[in-house]
Image (cartoon, rainbow, N blue to C red; front, side, top):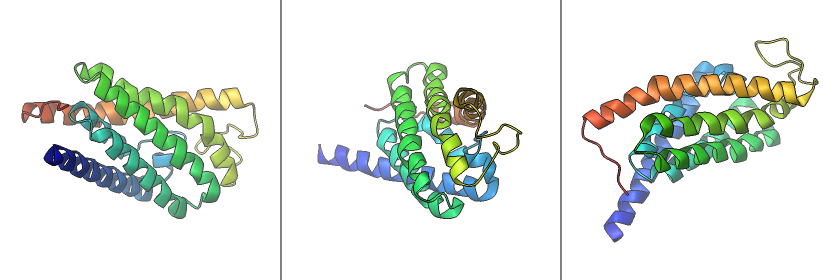
Length: 187
C-alpha cells in the first residue's frame, strides 16, 4: 500500500514538473500564442497522460497552477494573473478528470481538456487582457471594452481551436506511441 502511494506521488510530481516546464517554455518562446486569444499551450498535450494514470490529475493540476504562478512574473499580470492560476488550473483539472473517466475511449477522452479550456479560459481572458493594458484582443480589432458575450464566444472558438490542435495534433500521437509501447491504464 505504501509503495503504491509513493508511486502515485512520484508520478504526480514528475507530471507536474513536465507540465510546468513545458508551459514556461511555451510562454517564453511562443509568448502571446501560449496565453493569448489562440492558445497553443504545448503542455496541454500532456493531458493525455490522464488516459494512463490517475496520478496525472493532481500532477497536471499542480503543474498548471505552478506554471501560472511563475507566469505572473514573466507576463507581468500581477494580481489579475491569479484568475489564470485558479481558473486555468481548474480547467486543466476538469479536463484531466474527464480524460481519466473516459480513458477507454481516447478520442472522446481527449475532448475533455479541449472543452474545459474552451469554456473556462475565455470567461476571464478579456479581464486579464484589459488589466495588462490591451484595448483590443491581440491579433484582432475586437475591442475589449465591447460586449462580453461576443468576446466570450470569440474566446471559446479560438481557445478551443488552439486546444484541439495541441491535444489532438500532439497529444493523440503521444497516446498512440504510449499504447504501442505497452502502457495501459492503471487504477
